[in-house]
Length: 498
Image (cartoon, rainbow, N blue to C red; front, top):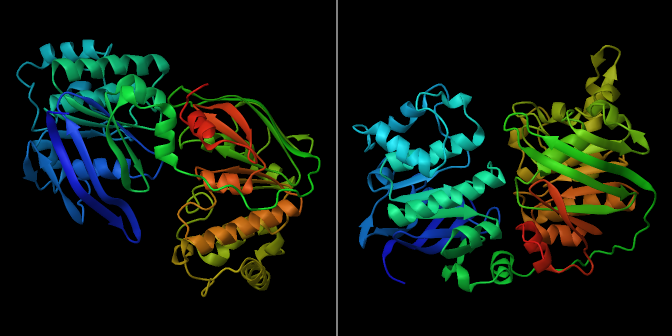
């Protein structure tokens, strides 16, 4: 393969004990559309942040046209013709389209802006006047402006991080045509970061795969590699469960019926016809790449999100129109994926965070009883092996594992009938993960119905009786974890139908 434009050699980047990039070698070829594939946390965005000057690696080198470059800032990356579109928009909402496209000093179309704007508006099928304010645009239109910014800033290497995540199927198809035009006519070198195999196959010519911070395959011709080969590279071998799943299964505790949900901001349908039920003593797992509707579904079941279509039934009680407190009274507990900010209040003490769920239990008349709160926290610490030396210290002084154990202990202490556990072990060490798993298994054995949402297939296989796969807001597959095939699950997660 010739026309090598950019090359990285042995790029290593760490965050504390986490090695986000581990001796990564990566190539880009002029005028080609590249796919960078990998699970969440594989290192894709970290590598792109290194190339765009946001992260500085501890080790390794970057070569552009054979010359070694020190890309120490986004400004230097921009001068070298490297630009990135991030998952979060970086537009000035109160400015016009023209203002956003001409803000950069690197802009190359100031003298003939209207002519160039018309050309690229046609390429991107953008039906908007250059004087329109960004805040008035749709999400899809904003995404097009983000990519056009790179063109106007003379970026020859365009790094696109999950650019289709906010697009409709029609907009995604149009984006494909636009990128092909840019590669062929303007010789742009494009990197598409995605987890969707369908997009890899439809958009790209060359694909590279990352896993756990390593580049496990690079420079694969897209047409020559199969979906199963890519899935195996992405996910490797998943260990089958050694946990006994022959426990007693009881009556249905949670029913989710015909759930549909529209995001009011983007006006995109995030959930479509979601149906399932969970029985006492059963763990139902939900697999899927982040951003496919998991957070929205958990918020709907827990009562945080109130505007949706469909029914939520807990212990034969329809709670669809009721809020969080009513669902807690029916013994539902929610362990959110954002432990610090949603589950626990940052800047607030350990003891105050411990009583949030059972605030009324610790009251004495109109006041909070100091002795009751202290006794309550000590019971949590003892029962769930929490290390919290100073109850009055801010919650953030605890380790991630102890924060999670406090959150789970607070939510599990009353033996809830229904538990929604979303990413319960994310970011924890091995010992903390085992402790959390033991807590969930203990609750299962006590008769809780558990909905386990996780991006960790090892965890889902280990704990779940059954497994659902969600993709673009739809349940696309259902598996029994005893005889499930990892490749089938991986394909479903990537949106590939058999």
